[in-house]
Image 1 (tube, protein in one colour):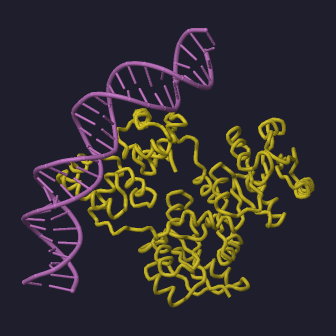
Image 2: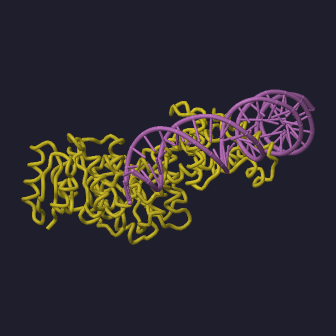
Image 3: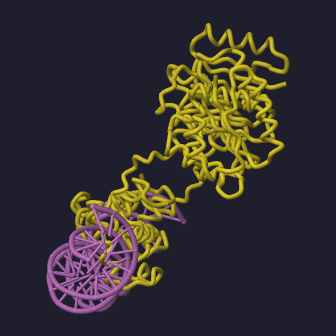
Length: 209
Length: 209
DNA sequence: TTTGCAATAACACTTTCGGGTTATTTCTTA
DNA sequence: TAAGAAATAACCCGAAAGTGTTATTGCAAA
């Protein structure tokens, strides 16, 4: 028996999901809630295996909900069930530990299958969601290069390790004056005026590792 | 008609996949290859919509293959079909632009469905793979916090934007001396001795955004 | 072959950092 | 309520960092 709790402020929808689960072999609905206000109390009472969680709910929403649940008990699987497919909310959910992400526009059968999947350690996602997730990994080669020379990239890399001018000079076997010179050119090309700024930009634009 | 090319060094397996596709409505196998040696020539001749790509192949493997294909033509969907579920190879594939990742241990029906999915812009993944991908997003709370106070994190964040002490003082409306003091404490907690080092560590350990 | 860029180096000078010390206020917790 | 963080602030001082200027060497492109 898989115990499922539902968080969904649309009563019509939560009723529907509940009925579907009740009519499916092996599922038991342990609770239905309109928001995550008492989510920690809820789960300690209901001890669900899987939580089906909407995002947009009054009072305490699903974003905060998934964080609270996961901090309290990592064993409980949280399946997001929402209309949103914008990447901001999506990635925020994933960062907070959601185990799956199904859009409401998908079929009900898919939701049931997804609950089974998370329960078995899978990570069900709507195709549109999976696509965005994969794309986040796909490093675009559109990263600007700022026309840094080979040597300049090397110096910037060393700076980004946190090295001082002196240490950079020592490890590249050039004078500190030349290091100064290079950095001066680098700062110009990156449109920055300090080491911290350069390092910041270098990390953000993935000019260094 | 979806045109599919197959890259797979195990002839028995590639035959099997080919036969399955030929017996499925709407698919046409345009080519079967043992490695990616001439992948660019192959695709310009065969003009496939989808490529089913093994990773472990002699001469030129699937890792290099997917990169070449995607650099040449982003429109061609590449579906990895491999025995490997180790995260190193998995993430390398995703970075290189693979559109889906199916394990050979999954059913043949799943492979066919996956080919349909990539063709329709989805991102099919075996459950075990999807799980790893999601976990990569899940920032573990095991990232050291270094016991920074709220204020210290704020100051570190500002420093990581590339701000000078003076600017940090201005934007937080505290004196530069206090900024100095905070940074001094931060450097001690992070075990570093300069702003660049602190920024570097902050980015690497994801203490800032 | 000359022009130009990249890399190297030195000197001078100002500003910013980083460390040490000390002190007050506020807020939390034992 | 007393102890203890946390945030605030000031002062000193030496060490880095950042800027400007000038110059030499080597290499590649025009």
